[in-house]
Image 1 (cartoon, rainbow, N blue to C red):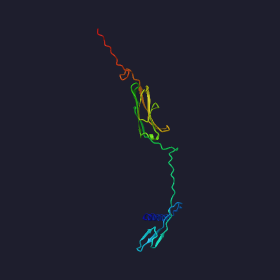
Image 2 (image 1 turned 30 degrees about the vertical axis):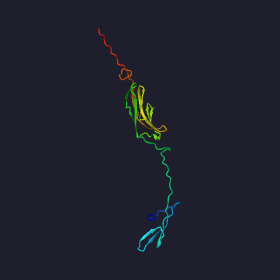
Image 3 (image 1 turned 90 degrees about the horizontal axis):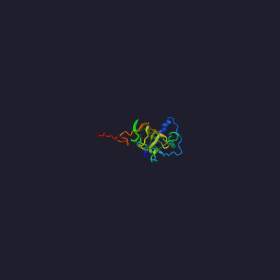
Image 4 (image 1 turned 120 degrees about the horizontal axis):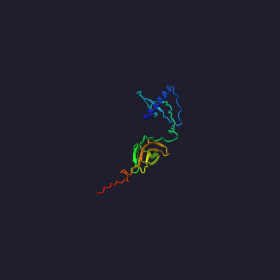
Length: 203
């Protein structure tokens, strides 16, 4: 009962303030809640109390203002442009291996490609991590791979993340690597043969 009395008294004070400030009242909504009657009771000791129940002793019925209610307003969904969902933002994508201008031997070395992506790949959103050599994909959805049979010459190594529509979301700066033909005279070459030194014949 005390809560109801507090609410009703607050409404009375707000209505009185609005009238004193010349603020026009709004029409009540069709589904405005019904307000009970409120009585002001003055006892023999001069104490004033309020109640929503008809008292037995003399009481004055209070004139309560109509409590207005406002209809619920539907908030439209946020439009991120062109009707598309917000795009996840990656902060960095770099090639760790090979290093810039690294030299490998065509016949003996395997080219290792390793990349670092921050934050982690969002596969659940249809994103794909691609490792590339000379613009061609050599591996997908892995941060490291090995490439064999690298042709002699300079090759460009890069990486990128694409969405489900093939659009590039982030791309790593390219790194050049140089593949050189190993000579059979090099001891590390698989076809290298240790030269045989002929011994001089004794006379």
